[in-house]
Amino acid sequence: MNENDYLRQIAALTGLRHYPLQGPWGRKSGSVIGARDGYVAVIGFLRSREARVVILLRFKKLEQPERVKTALNQSAAVPKKHGKLAEVGNDFLRWEWKYSFTKPKAEEVARLADALRESLKPVAQGFDGRCEHCTSASTSALTLMNGLPIFICPACQEKVHHELDQAAINYDAIVPNYPNGLALGIGAAVLGGVAWGLVAYAINRIFLYGAILIGYFVAGGVLKGTGKVTRIGQVIIPLLTVASVLFGDAIFYTLAIMKHENAPFSSKLLGAVISHLWEIESEGSGVLGIIFALVGAGYALYAARKPKFKAAFQPLGTPNA
Ligand SMILES: [Zn+2]
Figure: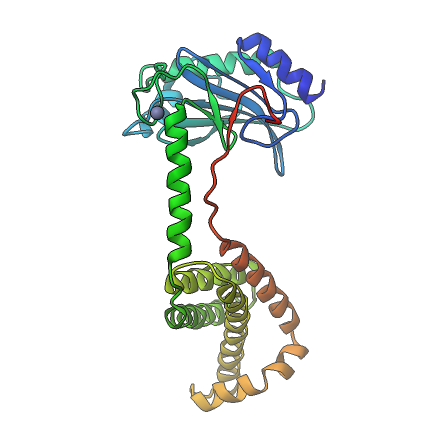
């Protein structure tokens, strides 16, 4: 059965509706969406490495979302073999049911959604026909905000747009502090490089995650210093990341020479290693280190994307509007 037919079946069984192309997970088959007893439900497919059927339930904001976790764990109605609780936020829970070849039985998914909702009732309230934001304007229909169904009145949608516009304007108005960004970025690169060198020395090999971590670390330093994402920052970050990994390699080789020659540490030795780094690298596994550094830099750039200040509102049932 294809995803569309499957979701149509789930919709029929749950009394909710199937909306192709809509929902939070961006798949063509869309999602089954609706509210029962005030609890918003979204059921659909998520595919990254593994295929999953996902049930998302939304409720009124809670102070202690841990109580949802406890309630579901203790619930006898929720079958423990049918997937697991993937995440709980202060106004939602997400249940994921992994499968490999055949999709879980639609009846079982529908029953699971019911069981989750019932188990939720003692600890979390459903929505009551009013806007979630201002909690006053009567709002009976769900609206998708960036794909997520919520109860939000037109006035609050305006307000969200306005606030995001304002946030974008404020962000644009930040004057980037490059000296600060460079200082923190270099600091992060030096620390990351030392850590890379010491770890490589301790376990006697280099590993890719280290380079990725350094990338994130350097990106964090530069962005904290400059105060915003800029082109110049996006050039500095990968450069510093590569420099950091190379510096880390230099420390690793210096430590190795110290051990081998039984020599004490000296800045002269470190200097000698750095000035011959290219020759040393090209002989050993250095090329791998540089590739790792570039991957780290790529991740760093990904980490340093400009924040998005956009909210798209979309009524249910009109995916192309
Ligand atoms: Zn409102």
